[in-house]
Amino acid sequence: MITLLAGLLSFELQAQNETTTKPQQAKKDTTATIDLLGEMNQTVPQKEKLLPDKIIFTQRIFWGEKGLMRTFNAFELTPEKRMKELKVRRTMLVTHQILGMLTFGGMIAQGIVGVKLYNYSGNNYESLKNTHQALGTAVAISYFSTAAMSLFAPPKMLNERKGYSSIKLHKGLAMLHLTGMITTLVLGAQLEENPNNLNLKSWHRAAAFTTFGAFTASMIVIKF
Image (cartoon, rainbow, N blue to C red; front, top):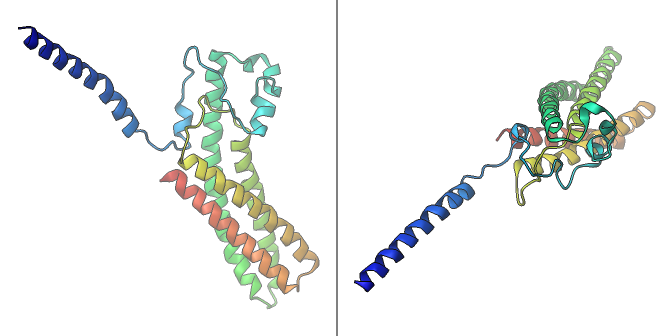
């Protein structure tokens, strides 16, 4: 009888262990890659830090514990007001995506005109050049506006999980196309003063294509 009771008790304890560990395993197995919009739907948990441990310097300046926005009563660091900040964050990141699509279209148009310009020497050269410059100005404005929506948005609630994520890859590619964009603009300005410099033309074109490639990749990883 004692042996039978011991066996039943052992079986019951094993069943309880299985019921407590399986949800944890399921939670681990179903952890999805955090995407840009997924970060926006966070809520402020009770007895939790109101800011993540690490935030970028542009966010720290405005939204850190002693950031500029904390001087306004509407943005005091409280759970209720952090909830409002997360709504602001969502709006800014949606705008970031919309402006990103517009920038992408502008880059394509500018690239087409730019390729024609490199191989063009007819009477309409100046007109084509002016079109390329106008597109370049529009793309630069939309590009840096897109970047600002992300760089100056309020920080998310939780720390980033360790390991690979689409967000980390997106940010890494953003650093690449930001560098490429600045390089493209600098070389473009130098070409204005030296329009016949073939080396400058080659570098400018390489920087532009690198920027476009990195920008396109950053959009793809955030969608998929």
